[in-house]
Image (tube, rainbow, N blue to C red; front, side, top):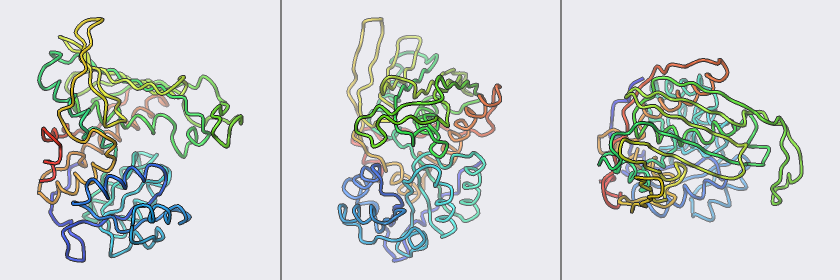
Length: 378
């Protein structure tokens, strides 16, 4: 799988050099994206339309953020006022919506993952290539100020030579929706953040071995604010998945993802020959990395990069500007393809009870510019 040949032809059909974005999906995450695109980075892109399944919630978002058009999905993906389609819906709809947008001649950027099936992910990349279009995906948190500071601490040898990396996320999501195969559970929801971070730190993965467990087949919703409060439901997905990862560089790592925990407990730690780096939450743009050189020795480090609040959507704008400037996007095709392959290899491994060797490779994304971060757009 190769990165697409770069072209600066992402201007819109109206003759303006500002690419126009149509958004599909108006759930909670859309507000974060729209704030980034319409208030923080609105010099580089323009949101021209929004669509949702029923249309009612899209009208509310359009009014809140002054989006000119509320369209059906069909009209948005074929609209002459849209150059890029941003898909923020549930994962089980990603493949069909992305296919529709690509067939409509639109570049596409999605919330992760691209699909809940590996074969469909490959089909989307193939379709984008056939159409001469760009296809990108979150997570873009690795472009944020906190994680970029972690990368710099490693590059500057603060902990010596890295030896291993450890990731863990414990959760206790009560909603029945989270445990359905149409969402993918904790593996499909949270692994992308950790895989993108690990690959950005240490490069591509060579092979992976996983085990999965479900310590309970049913769960009761204990969230008093939920309409499902007190209801018992069946889990369709593994509650816990633990993986060993061997990187092409020789680094080794492990990653545990569990929704059988007691609360949200994220952890990403790099052990080195001279110390330990406790990274920020891979699902967040903020948080100070901590250096540790002995058991009771902790040094929180200041952030030296911009984009240290919730800048979801940053990856889309960075991708667009990279194409316009004739350079490779940081969240480029090879990188996104590879972490998706690792994600599905984790699932394949616990189902087959065997090591899975990866076929794809990629380079770690280039670091963001030191400073505020806005230099990346010029």
